[in-house]
Image (cartoon, rainbow, N blue to C red; front, side, top):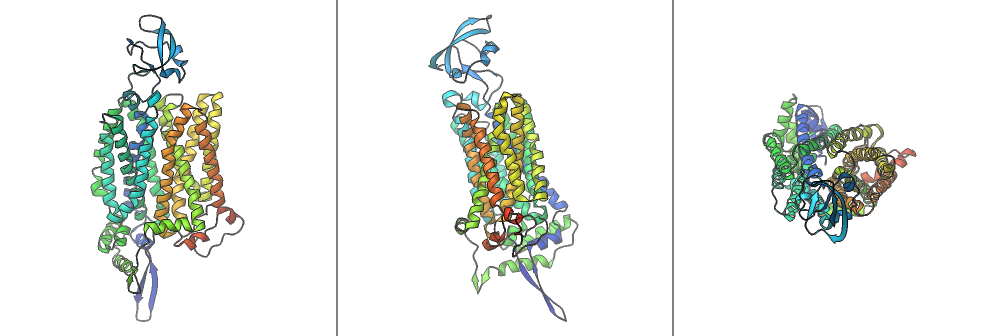
Length: 562
């Protein structure tokens, strides 16, 4: 977020005094984290919950019970002998079978498999569970449609990354936030009604688009309403809401065995969000940036009143005038750099380019690991509802760990430690299967917890190391790159199901360890530093390794904690 700087001239009988005021200074006068901002964080928690709810219902709607070819004339109550069913291989589940003997009139004792593919459809071992997989028979030759559905949802989120920022800059934070949230819940509800798999995938893609536009807009709005020392609380509120959804969705999945009713009831939760129309404000920063200083003054006056602070008065007017005057250079209008110019700066400045690539890898890995594991938690041994609930609850320690550790040991070291620890857990997990299945699941969930902490730090380090005019573009580029990891994750897990189950964990763990090493080598420490205004300022921020070698001083900045 750019700092709007102004110069105020204060006249007295003896002299005149010149001082600089920023948007942060005005927030200091109306309250940087008072009652008003705490209410905003509560709203952000709710928005984070809505995003987690829309995403993580896929754990249960796309659950695939064990299956086998339907035997002609056999009904769903005539089950396999459990011992036989357990011994069926993945390949045999897609082959026709012939019943050789019966224990009684309802229980099969022995079967013989043929080389023919299923011709009469499939029978699922949990007939009471109705999912997208069982309704549309997404198994065997059609199993690839599951990762396709998830990837299209992630593709929608990627588009939301690109369009959300420019639209909120053009039309305002509040209109885009409310519109995106409304459409997100409408598509969530509508996803409970598709007649074909194609229509389901299309609805999922649109839901992903509006979900991420809502999430990113909420993040920007929250950061523009609090002081810089409290920005972590914005991230914590959004992530906290998302994690609360991760722990809540298993309860909904347990209540609703029918995937259609799970989606419909989740969509109806959107009715609880109607009051947000009266509570979500517009950003004063956006009002100032768009030349609407009087409206900004009104919002700031409301913040001051709720926080018990005096009316900001002339400060907001002065800030508005300065913002208007700052657009004039030698009598001509000074244009803000275009998105094309911003991206060009990211690519052409060597230091910024290298750091963007390193942090983009971090985003890609954290997205890949999180969604790869979270959306496939039901595939691990044990009760799928308990596994999902524990996995969701343990997201809180990951968030808390990330929010605290960056204050103690800084950004790059924290990110590197959490990423490395998560990578090691994932790389070792498949080999722990020989010890016990519970140990494997524990390692996976612990590894995911570490990665969530790294996920949390990504937002902070990306924004803080980027120059002011490139900050939004940098977050947009790296976040969108992260969505490539989300897009690839379901195919990576599918590859493990169809080839070698060790492969996804080794790839994810290896990439996490590589990202950990590159982070500590090339990313700068930004804790206690003033955010850089220009590419030259950004280059003066030294990588943490150089800082440790005694090269700590820069030509700008301050040492107050952020």
